[in-house]
Length: 84
Image (cartoon, rainbow, N blue to C red; front, side, top):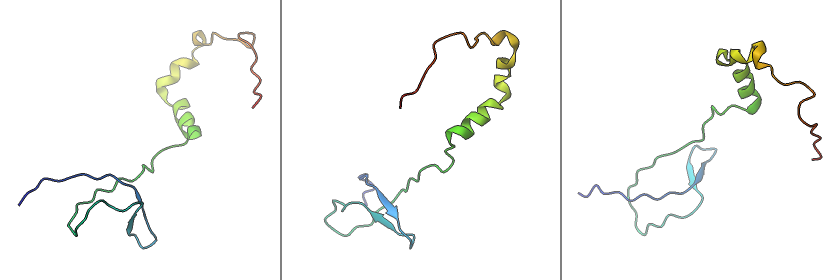
């Protein structure tokens, strides 16, 4: 028995009956047994506001609260007006 495997990458969806439905036909001519690996998108991705809140409360950035780190004033730089 030959254990050599060929990989085919495609996409699909899991339907309401929890079945895998592929987006395209597979290029396989005959009936054969296959091995399937399903990759799901990470559900733990956090939004930008949650990331900023976490970073702001992280003690690793406490040094930024020290007076010597506060080096800019409102008079520094030029105003930015978003025209979008």
